Image (cartoon, rainbow, N blue to C red; front, side, top):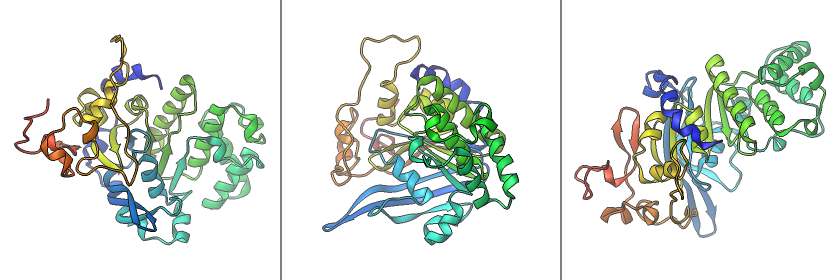
Length: 353
């Protein structure tokens, strides 16, 4: 997404679901101390470390970070699609109070597709080339809803129209290869929403699309959340997409949550040095610069994560405890928390500004 959107996002975000951001209502999704590991012959490598966050009903939570931060693993854990040998080694994923980690595969299949669905980055991996989009939509509706075939067809056509597919009656019998990339992604969104799910995991849904189509998909996700009360966990590496779409943002680094808070606060005044680096690397409208700032170094791989704060080798503000102790999460404002030693009481570097 074109990143000048950052310049106006803070103002626009103020109108996004204040109740959801404050946590006034019981969360639809509550992830608590989630850990995922990769077993091997010498033990196990931890890929996610004690991930915790809540998502309110009807809220769009953005999850952002570089490649390898653990964003997609978090989404796959929620929907129960971790690929072996990956496995959940600790914590809980509460969906309306029910722990998804405690469900059998058969029980999870009954929830997946109806209550919780996913939108993936490449629509071709979600669409069967041997079936028309109408057949795929009708199969999904008939599997999860108590309707007749005629009702399933009408619902499928209505959903195609709602996601912006022109001439739904005509396109109903077309195959995936007969659609453009943007139209295929709309079909995937229709498939994800046709059974009235409560929660959608959207994993990089706009990455492969051009800027104009990205804007259309973002507008569609926002409208569906607003009009249908659908809760969305939006996973992306693009802070511009997050700023335009989400009410709150969760910043991840090396399998941990390093900052979480309202998007308007995090965009205008990020507190964690990693969040600051992400924002400083994005061009802003009306602020021409010769060279963008960059975060030196690269994301560590699971199994090679340094002791202490995983970000400390790249952090320009590191000090004595950073290379020895993993920082806890400090609440710095209502609904805003940062996992950084700079926010410990009496930190040696003084109060961060």
